Length: 265
Image 1 (cartoon, helix red, strand yellow):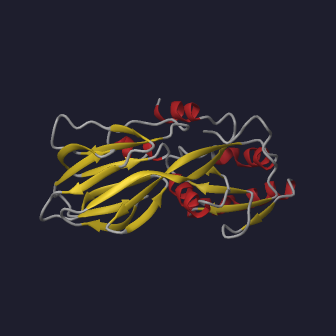
Image 2 (image 1 turned 135 degrees about the vertical axis):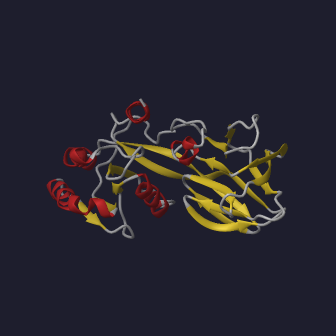
């Protein structure tokens, strides 16, 4: 699912930047790299050919949301804790930006999620979570995939994640890691009160529908770490792979498996 087809990536002329608080001291180096390459740095709301993120995975996700539907690839320098989505570390910033400004990067298309609950709709780039809204209270979730019922499970939450989200909350809950390029989503349970709950990889075209069967406890509906609503008793949320794509730019040598080996070895 890379967007490259063997042709060289055009060198960007206007580059937006998004950063977290930890990365403010790195701005002079970014500006110096941009000036050396005759690249104009712009604010995220301006027209851009490429977006640079100085931050962690959370900042990368914020950038994906900002540039969704704008055909702007996002490349990251890790100024966070984990940084799985980032191409380079802080000490590699100047050389990495020199390469990126010369067009030495590839673009990977990552699927998004569309969710719908009681008339409310939205798009998530990482994950959609239905979890207990009361701390310490287990909930009963009924779930179905592609219209086929899979029963009820007592648990703390269910996580539906994209490939980019599969290395986040989904991974900590024991869910599978999806390599970039797989057009699928994962469904994983948090603290299931059963020995038979297993995570599931779901292909495009199959909705995951989760219904709250806990009479006294609402569910919090969370998209990309932000609560977007509640799911009352006997109400549902439907999650599917979306039509929009997040565009992840990466240096050619910063492959998924290179990052996987470094992060999880």
